Every structure is written in C-alpha cells, then in structure tokens.
Image 1 (tube, rainbow, N blue to C red):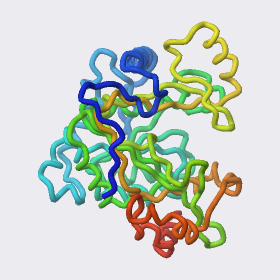
Image 2 (tube, one colour):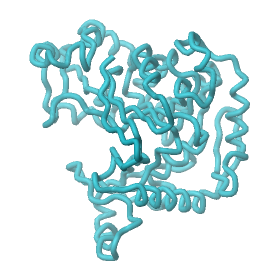
Image 3 (tube, rainbow, N blue to C red):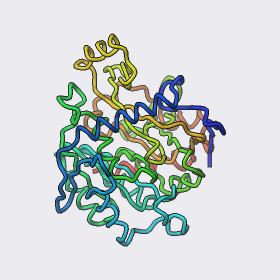
Amino acid sequence: MYLREYYRSKNGGGVNALNNADSNQTQTQDSKQNLESNTKDSIKIIESTQKDSIKFTLDSKNPQTTIAAQFIESKRNHKLHNGYFDFDPAAKNPKSPLNPWAWVRVKNEIHTIKACLESILPAFQRGVIGYNDCDDGSEEFILDFCRKYPSFIPIKYPYSVTLKDPPTMQNKLYFYLTYIEKFIPEDEWILKIDCDHIHDAAKLYKSFYLIHDHQSCIFYGRIHIHKFDNELYIQKYDNGFIIEGGDQLLIQRKHWWHIEDLVSDKGEVVAMSKDKWKKSELDDFLAKEKMYKNQEFGMIANMDFIYYTEINNWHFPYIKDFRANKASEQEWVKLDDFIESNKDLINTRIDSKMLDKDYILSLYNRFA
C-alpha cells in the first residue's frame, strides 16, 4: 500500500490541512463552537418520523436523546450484509475506525448511485444517506436501498439547498451538511462518499487499518476520468493529475465540521469563517454574497497524523447532468498517454489494474 505521512507532532503543534497555514487551534475551535451554537439555535423546526425516511431537528440540550439517535441505535440490531469486516472481530466495535459510517450525499444522482453504493458495501457496515431536492428517481432508489440494507439510514433534508443567494441559513450548503452529520455520534468515525465515485472496496477497507488513534485521519486522493467517443481520458491540472483530497477523508466525526464560504465562478475563494472579521471585511463579504456561489469549507481539528493512500476509487465527475457540458472545457490526456508518461505513479500511487481500459469501460456500463 502506498502511504505518505503528512504531519506528525507529539506536542499537538497545530496543522489545519484544509485551512490556511497560519490557522491555530484556538481559531478553529472558536469557529466550531460558533457554528454549533448557530446551528442549534436555528434549526428548531421539525422532529418527526416518516415510514421510510427521517426528518429531524437538532436538540440543543442533548442531541444524543433525539429520535435520530434512537433510530440509529435500533439499526444496530439488524443483521448486516457481508464484507471484509467479517474477518476481523475488532470491526464490530462501533467506536472503531474499522467500522466507520459512510456519509453519502445525494442530489439527483440516479445515473451513478446504484454503482457507487454497491461498490462500498463490502467496506462499510453502516451509513447515512442524506438527500435533498431529488426529482430524478434518486429518492425512490435510496428508500429501496435502505430497505434492503437497513444499517443504512435515509435522511431527507427538509429544505432546498441553493448555491446562489440562498434566502435563509437553512438553504445554505454548509448548514445542510452539518444537519446530516448530527445523525452520527461524535466519537464515531465518518467517511464522506460522493455518488460519482466507484470504489475498490478491498483497497478502501485496507486503508482503515492506518488509523491508530483518534488524532489520526486519512485523505483519499482521486483522478478524474471521462469518456469521449469510447476513448478514455484523465483530466490534467496545473499541479498534475491527482487531486490529493480533503473532500473525502476518514476522521472521527467530532474533529470535522463545516463553515460557510463564497466561491466565484472561476473557483476563487472569496471568504471563509466570519467569526474573526473586521467590519470592513464583513461588509465586503455581504456585498459579494449575492454575486458568488455559497459553498462550504471542510475544517479539521489539529491532527498528529494525516495519511495519504493509494488511489482506491474511480471518479467520473462529468457524468453528473449539471457538469456534463463542462467536460469539453477541461484539459484531458488519453489514458494510454497518461500511463506512458506517469510511470512513477503506476503501482505506487495507482495500481496498474485500476487503469485497465476494458475494466473502466465496464464501470461505465453500470451507470443508468
């Protein structure tokens, strides 16, 4: 297995791999506490169950006593599907990194959701599937999947999520993500899954063994793959082909949270956490808020160890309908040329078997 250790500090000396380099523990902790306070004060709206899915409000006094926590606990008694976790008794411990929650985010993913979820089943015993604004059949698929695999919990977010000029806090992306993650106990492990990935479950599960304490986390890298006229291509970026991660990581839930930021159409991050801003900075943010997309920024607490592993997934970002017309605007390299010119990555960062053309084309055939 490829492994790169990013940082180690016996003194807890401060790294925030997803934030600016000069961030410190006090700032990130203040940001987290501010977010928690705002979230708890603002969501008091719904606490109800439905037959097939849950709508839930955060309980500011004791989230663990809410109906969501009770629902999660009831799921523990269901017979699980089979997977690599069957071979290690330690994986039965709900507090173990060998037994993380899959946190699956869905919005109109009908083309890829079946292939994605089936690919992760041998690695994950349980999960939450948070979804919103689905009108393409994704919701019906999710509910059917969770009936077949009852250790996966469907959670329908009761608000529309809007990236351009969201009318309320509940319509913002970071708020939605925080809402769904509250279904997972803080001292248990979490790994976010996007439905435009297909995973090699054996490689994914093997990576869980890298975690040795709660101050460790794993970043999962990816390469972008697309098919033009039955020819496979790898997307190229200024710094190479591998996106090192940050969007998908294995981490204890209490060490990861989300803040609000704005992103321009060119990808420029305009601003992040507003907790420490001066009035002039806040005025600048508010002036731009209606012109830029409202996004989220993942924050992690200071970690002693951050690991990067071999690539264990195939990412097809331009399969999504809203991105499809942007594929031709990107820079691409033919798969064969990528293999020929990146021999240093083959069988170090990327198993050569994962670049087999016929196999990748067979993955495309799994999409609806």
